[in-house]
Image (cartoon, rainbow, N blue to C red; front, side, top):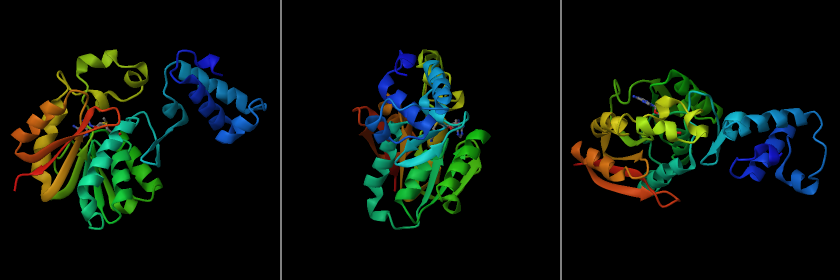
Length: 271
Ligand SMILES: C[S@@+](CC[C@H](N)C(=O)[O-])C[C@H]1O[C@@H](n2cnc3c(N)ncnc32)[C@H](O)[C@@H]1O
């Protein structure tokens, strides 16, 4: 199996995951009896390995991705959630821990699979969330994931263009917008450029189009004590901080991800 995945980073781990998924095995089964015949599951494992070797991410082959300890179904319309996006959840928890029991209102711009809003609803048990996405397919996927996770009654998913048509004051606004410069998309790993939706990646000519469109909505919709957290690409924190400052947002800060990259720009509204 590992040979079939030649060229795939961390082939042994992915081979084990393919075998386990195809045959319904637990991790210990591969250790206790690594040579046990797979039976009819062998064909499925081979087909999955061939797709993985052709550049399809394992999460898309298996149709699921874990984020913040929760399991999300994926569809071609939704970005495969990334571990570094958990930095937003960490930052929001750190900043708002004193308000965890309040019935706060959240919005997640560019909701995708629903990973961020679901993670936040899991941590703030009295909160209500709105998720917005321009992609009807992503919105449908978010809706399905939130329902499967038991959050349907605390979340509303809308199809829309950032904050257009949205009113009200939100205590927490999060977004992981598309931030790859259009010209850089062709150079991304094929797992990303061929399998994540272009709408989830393309940040326009310089990568900042979504921030310029989105941040004025953040400034308009943030409650007086509210906080916002937006993910940024490597090297983008300073420019996004400047866009937020120009929109009148205050108390601006950045937070690094586990790789030490400035990953989140946050702030509040000037009082
Ligand atoms: C990088 S993905 C993030 C998805 C998800 N929040 C996550 O972190 O896994 C960006 C999302 O923004 C959505 N999007 C792009 N342009 C948008 C717009 N103008 N208004 C609302 N959503 C938009 C995309 O469809 C995509 O789902």
